[in-house]
Image 1 (spheres, rainbow, N blue to C red):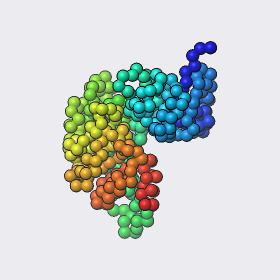
Image 2: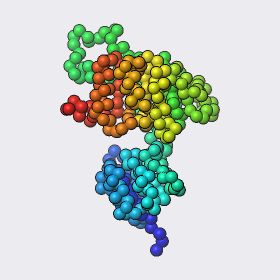
Image 3: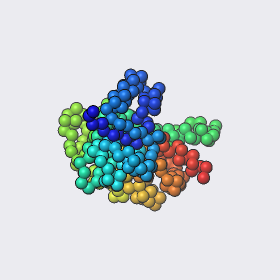
Length: 329
């Protein structure tokens, strides 16, 4: 009998009984998941964590006990170097575009595979939704009505709660990868002026979208843009790349959008600048340095919002639970 690799899945989300049975997924895809799972079961010995989010200690214990050759994981599972050092693992497969949750050891030849080209359109759509919600002040206006503050005295007023149109804005894209390109593809026909910064100039892409403008210095994007959207990977070169100096360059009432990675942004510097009123910018944030965001940070953001109610702060769906927890406390 040939070699059967041992494969450890860090979450039961990958199984036919979970993602393979989710009725939100196309039936053809679900059938294919079950087919591929059966094929894998025949050629490998499998171990699946019974749950969605194992702790690092649980993963380490399972790896020590099972001694796998391959790990299957996703973004919510940190694979630390300490887990890998004493193992025989030769490959890690993550079902994500990014792979900064996997730590390489000093001297290993572990193969890491990921899944680019899966969510770039979805994230681009979501990014634009955040931008439009901010420009049109949708969340605050919704809450104004929902909380019973709409009265006969302010049914409609020409100079209050004014929203913005995107066509007269300058959009700055930081990182022209799959997602950054998709954002441009969608907004380019709207007549938006678009700047972009990347370590490589995308000349072929510029031929298709000739009115976009390349900036070889990130500071130019922060100085000139009304909207700045981050689409770069997290690594040792980009950690906290959006620092105090860049934030202070932003225009008054500009919008900073982060749907990439939380640690790209120096969040402590951001909060400090906002609290001291050294900057006045809008935020649309989908990711944070620590997730879920801690209550103290959320309290600081809410306090800033009360002091500067005209500023828009939008957080992703993960924040709904956090907001409820804050109110309960």
